[in-house]
Image (cartoon, rainbow, N blue to C red):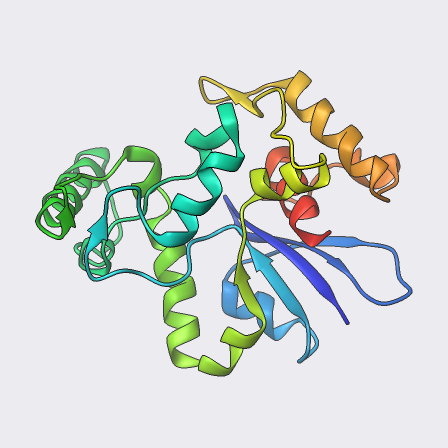
Length: 221
């Protein structure tokens, strides 16, 4: 069976894939649908994106978010609380200016507060992945048969499991910039679980960052 780890990236989606008897490979796709269409019909896909949107957001977020945070210690801030479906779809147009982007964020926060208990707005980080969440949501609504093999995952949870159920010691990023020590820690862990360093040291496919590449690689294991 083909196993695929997927993360969102600047150019769309990065997938790290392993087919039976083959070495892993990595590629970037412009859309989630295009990624799925490039895979065998029985491929299992683990994607770093929320799947399933609540009508009302409760304290702590959705069930998966509340369950995994206690596992991650100092890394639990990487798990965003995703608001209601109405907030996700409060603004679906593209943005031509930074002012429009912030206005859309404020609108989404207003809707999120009206559909959460207790009332809670939307973080900038969570709002930044709304378009990706909607993209997966639309694909799984249009093609419900995919729900049997497309699963929500989280890279820091994957690293934690690979690390003997211990959260990673160092962050991948510090103040938005890549932390080389945190990346090295994760790369070494992946090598202990079967990746060859040459694969992990390669330049990520165009349109994906190095941390996107490692995250997708972790979720494939």
